Length: 341
Ligand code: DAH
Image (cartoon, rainbow, N blue to C red):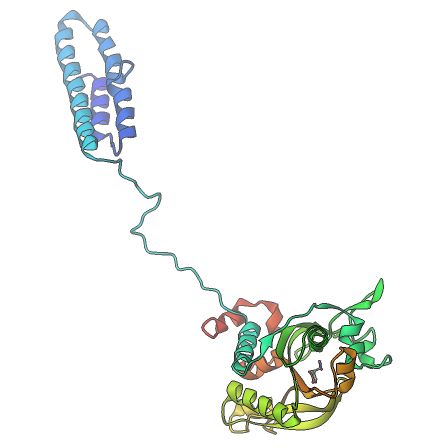
């Protein structure tokens, strides 16, 4: 057998056909008018007359073989209603695990705090991070010479000193009091900004959550009870709170709130510097000046307010020692919170 015929024969035997398109390609390549077998028949003219018969037999056998293969596949595909739909990938391969994202510890802490206050009827209010002097300072009774108004404490906009990055979420108190009528029970979480050098304990951007409760006959006892409820829900029923007299221009009287975590564990002793107590925020009764500035009748209504740092609470809850970890986006730190919500 001529090597050309031998090669084509082997090709036909090994040719894989897996759909109608490939069958048609097979047909054109070997059996068609311009196919390889037709071309091989051209060899008849080149061989000696006595070899012609033998060559003819071989070529005919080759042609029959190709046609038989064609027919076999044609029948096979005809019996199928549709061509097999082959996925572009191998479904039997094991899956490539996709790493799950998670909430940031600040979001987790914030959500926990919100859930606790929602249960006692607080809603959420938001205010802008780019504030004006009135909402951040003046309406909150900050005198003109107050140190918080200094350039080294607050980020101001150079072209318009009336515009600043809010230094606390207390500015949202003013916005709520200006736009709503008591009773008011609201929480205002969000980002705040201070012109501070970044260290393990301070950052120029951090988060606070503000609470405001205004109604008839709201008393300091309500404030104390609300904060005790909150502290026990967040840190456990065993914790106590204490209030130390303090000063804020927008509350009178004002207090700092401490939580008693105890001194039993090494972590608690470290966190509380051996005292068992840890400060979580400021609070007080809304100063009548603020009510007046916002158009609320200070004779009819009283209220309390409180403000807490979210980072600080997250640091207590998860025993985080460096504030910078919250903003470094180090995946080794963040992934420890994936299963916490
Ligand atoms: N705005 C205060 C701060 O950033 C925190 C604060 C204190 C908020 C007393 C209050 C409050 O609502 O009553 O330091």
